[in-house]
Amino acid sequence: MATQSFFDESQDQSDVKRAIVSKYFWAWAKVIIPTAKKRSNRIAYIDLFAGPGRYRDGTKSTPLLVLEKAIEDDDMQNMLVSIFNDKDEAHSRSLEKALTSLPGIENLKYKPEVHNEEVGEEIVMMFESMKLVPTLFFVDPWGYKGLSLRLVNAVLKDWGSDCIFFFNYNRINMGLSNPLVKEHMKALFGVERANELRQRLELLEPSQRELLIVEELAQAIVEMGGKFVLPFRFKNDRGNRTSHHLIFVSKNFKGYEIMKEIMAKESSCANQGVPSFEYNPADVRYPTLFNLARPLEDLEELLLEEFAGESLTVREVYRIHSVGKPYIIKNYKEVLREMERTGKIQVNPPQDKRPKHTMADSVAITFPYMGGA
Image (cartoon, rainbow, N blue to C red):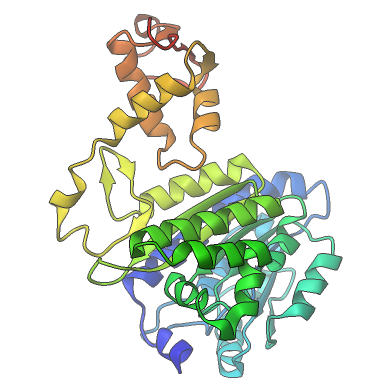
């Protein structure tokens, strides 16, 4: 009943989620396709909890948005393998009907597959035993059943594959203290980490619990081989509680960089141009709350401390420093230009030798040693 009502209408959070996934699919495919042509000449999109083709209000679900993009592109028409699954038979039938009715669907070389299976051990073992073509893997369970570290890693293990999954914070927060779903929590965090989490969470406030749970999940993914993890948080309608996260995982910095820019644009607020990486309906109602911090000044201090005495290009600064932080490349360039103006760094070539108000990726930055210029 809960999953059925979830698809009754398209909510703002669902719009943002679909936008993030479909935009990343397009950007990911464009990066992967040139190399994939030299290998298997195939790429894949897999969604194991696909839902129906449309919401009750008629809004297209993510599978339809993804395939519409593929139909529009000559390379993807010939290369995309798409696999959809939903254990709800009504959803899978509805999805199959919606996919069949898409204009131009017959132009796809590989007909979309729609399955009606429970996601569990068998599917994980199947992916673990296969060598996958480059795959964008989307896992969007209603709760937590079927979501596991092994499932994510089974797809990430192969070249060019990235994963986006839905992390239902409320249910997992409750599940960690519920002995009836202990096995699901072990599958998601690992045995030792799940046991330690339960003990540490007992003494924490709600906001601290969330930070710890998401951080431990990210660390568990990194230990499994997902080098880059990027969460995007969704708040409830009142903006006072987290409902869920959309979490991106990749082994490649380029994918991380692309998704960071996409999530930045979908964020509901940006303080000093620094994106919140969350969708919060309250942002537009209470803007004063988000103008108190000064995140760009924080970035300046972080750079001076981390790179004291070093010389790097702008691109190297961004690549090394940005992982796990909310800043995007535009923020780094803005701060570095200001640091150059105030004489806090040395820049080569200097501003008078560059086009006005620019800071190219190749520009060299020399940071002072701590305690002196």
